[in-house]
Structures are given as C-alpha cells and as structure tokens.
Image (cartoon, rainbow, N blue to C red; front, side, top):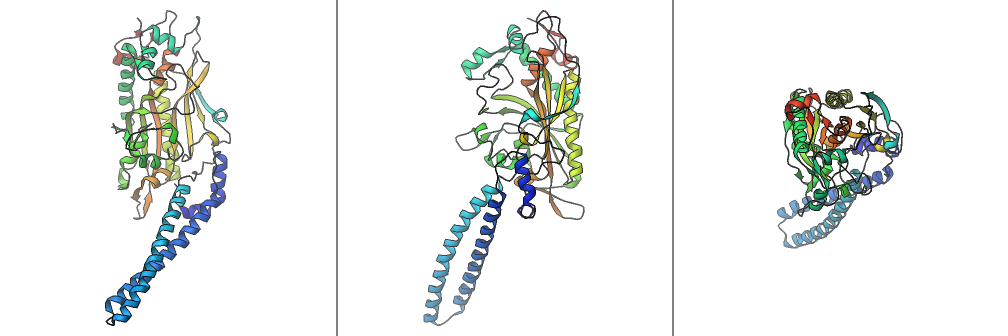
Amino acid sequence: MLDIKFIKENKELIAMAATKKRMKFDVEELIKADDKRLEMLLSVEALRGEQNKVSSTISMERDEAARAQMIEEMRVVKDELKQKEDELRELMVAWQSLMLQVPNIPDMSVPDGESDEENQEIKVWGEKPQFDFEPKDHVELMTNLKMVDFERGAKVHGFRGYFLLGDGALLSFAIWQYAMEFFRNKGFTPIIPPVIVRKQNLYGTGHLPGDTEDYYMTQDGDALAGTAEVPLMGFHADEILDAKEFPIKYLGFSPCFRREAGSHSKDVKGLIRVHEFYKFEQVILCEASHATSVAYHDEINRNTEEFIESLGIPYHTVINCGGDLGQGQVKKYDIELWVPKENKYREISSASYFHDFQTRRCNIRYRDEEGKMKYAHSLNCTAIPTPRILVSMIENFQQADGTIRVPAVLQKYLGKEIISR
C-alpha cells in the first residue's frame, strides 16, 4: 500500500507503474473516491461538532420549552449524522478497496515486458552435464529408485499428489539440514511459523486481493499460507521496532499450500508444480532506505545462488520484467535451475524487495535517529524449496546405470555417495 498523499501528488507515476506491471488500475478513480471520502468526512465531523455543541447547551438550559425545542433540533442533527456516517462507511469500503489495488512503483532498472518469457538473463553459472547415454527425467529415475510414488499420491491426495519414500524423503531431510546450517551462517534466525493464517496477513503481504484463487481457505475464513513470508510479516504487525536491531533476518521453514489455480494443464507430471511442499524463506526487515533495500536484495539473492553453487547444480539468474512483477514488488530476481531432460531452466527461487508497501499494510514501524516514525522496508527470497529442487538434482546427477550421485555437501547428512536400489 502506498500513502494516499504520495499517490495524489504522483498520479502519473502510479499510472506508469500499472502500465509497466500490466495491471488494470485507474488512479483517477481512486482520487475521485478519496475526494468524496474527505468531503463526507468533513460533513460528519461538522455534524458531530454541532451535536456536541447542542448537547452541551441542553444540559445548561433551564427552560423546559427551550429544552424541548433543542432536543428536537438535536434529533434532526442526529438523524442526519447517522445518514452521513452510513454514507461515509460505504465510501470508506470503496476507497479501501481501491487503495488495496494500487501497484507499487517498479525500479527504473526493471525491463519492460509482458510475461516471464521476456525476463532478462543476467548471470549463468555451471556447466550443463553432457551425458554419453540417453538421460531420463526425474519421474522415471525416482520411481525406479523407489524414491517417490505418484500413483498412490494421486489415490490419497488427488491431482498432483505424491509420496516421497526412502531415499526421496531422506534426501529432502539432508537438504533441510544443510540449508539450516548454511543460512544460519548467513546470520538468519530460524523460525517455524504457523501456516494457518488470518486473511489480514495475506492482505498485509499483498497476496490479496489479487491471488484469491490460489489459496486454500478454512471453514473459519482463514487461509493456508503459500509461503512463510506471510506469517513472518505478520509476526511484527502493529509493532514499533527498535531500529538498533536492524537488519532483522528470519529464516522461515514451513509447509506451503497452493491451489495452482489456472495451471491445471501445466506440468501435470512430476514434482515441478505441486499443491503442498516445504520451503525455507529468507525475510528481512530494515531501515527505510532505497540503497539499503537494494543492497539486501542483492545479498539474499546471492545467498541462494551460493547455496545452489555448493550443490553443483547449473543455473541462471534473470531479472523479472514489469509484466512478471507482483503488485507490491519493486524489483525481483528469479534463479532457475537447469533441467536436462526438458533442456530448459526451471524457477527455484525468487528474491524481491518492496520498500514500505508491505509494512504499511502490516503497520510495522520504527523511530529513526531523529525520533521520526517511519515504516520499515521488507524483502524476501526463497532459500530453497523441496521437493522441487529434487527435479534438477536428480536429473543433473544421474548416472548411466540409473543411480544418482549425491552432491558432496549432502553426503554427510544422507550417509551415502550414491543412491541406488
């Protein structure tokens, strides 16, 4: 959410942001709604003042006839005030709905583009494996090694269901243990948050109102979070933080739930696009400084790059174009891992910064050195998701005999160098 004063003073900038992000938003409609809201608010306040004045006068009046006349006049004012208050509530609902749709302004370095097809590659790392045999995909490899069972997963869960078995489960635990050690050494505090969250947390992080169809809702109107970012931003909601603690760095670990609405025909096989998974998420809260946000954005993205490099998986990093940015994101990087059988890169991580877009919604503030109250800046980045990372790991490290070579950094956790039947 942006400040309404800023929006009214920079409406051309807001219109540009909507255009660049390929969002439908009419800033003039918001400004008109705000003008009506302010006009009605003044009317309500004037009537409240008149009501208070008449009430005070009545309490001091001794003449019964005069008192009765004033009471009748106050009843008229009271009825008019109620009508105006009802109108104000309606105007506030419309105004708040529009305010929740205002796009954050993308950084000048964000390239123009319609979709992820136009994201720009900015880095390539690692050598793609050259096989002297016909490589298999992760579905066949993991099934043959009894690491996964998709048939029983579909029987129990339905479409996109899966069971990780034996070395499939153990490899996931190895990745989690290594990730915990790796990111703690980067100064992050581990947190296991609740993932059944109140909807206000989805609005706070900017996932609502836009992503309604992608969330599982409970009978009570709460939601299952699709990322630990949601509860971690709610952790400090409505708090005034101590600036001396900045940067606040959290490493959230949680199950994640996504309906994958609108992608029914995409990636129907395997572990690329599933409804439930586990993920480590980096979240940072810092001072309200653009330069500081940019520096931490590069840092958290580089953390995940280093993690991937330590595993030895080829990847490239892209900067997301305007059409592939979310409503609240100022800038975003995606890291994509090489998938040999598909002969393409697949997203494994996104790193984003938001300035104070999320913290305004969550009401997370601090006092600067001069004692002035400010909204903190927020950033987040995927540390690593499972089971998606298994796709690239299994396919890149497959051997001619169908076994899988375990990355060196994971061998001490898994207790073996080769996964075989």
